[in-house]
Image 1 (cartoon, rainbow, N blue to C red):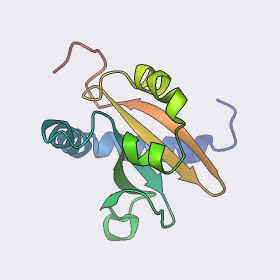
Image 2: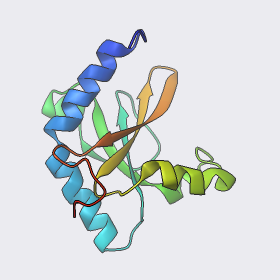
Image 3: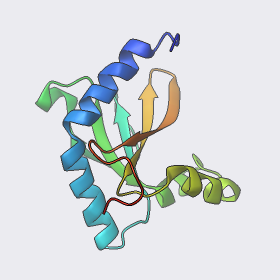
Image 4: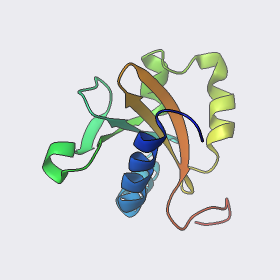
Amino acid sequence: MSDPLEKELKALQNELTEYSGQLLEITRELLKERVTEFPVFIAHQTDVSLGEIIIDLKEYEVPYSISVSTVEEFVEAGLIQKEKLSAFREAFGNPVNNMCVFWVHGDNARYILFPFAGRNTDTDS
């Protein structure tokens, strides 16, 4: 990867791996309670107007705060177009195996699909 953001992405991946168990537990709870079929985690270093913060970078002394939101909130905010929702869901895969992270870094933002630590097949449950 020759992307100039490679170092930041690596820091994010390390943080997500460290908190993978906690994020999976939150995902399972959201699915069980039928809040959403597709939770979206937001990794950010500044305040964002979406979701609910679950890991504060200042409190935990980590590179990124992590908030949790839903695909429905992202559609409502216009960050995912309704006509592209089925393609998004297909790319996402099984939400118990993969987390979707909306990475906000400076003026840039991108979606990253990241497997929960130790979970890399759709047959895990």
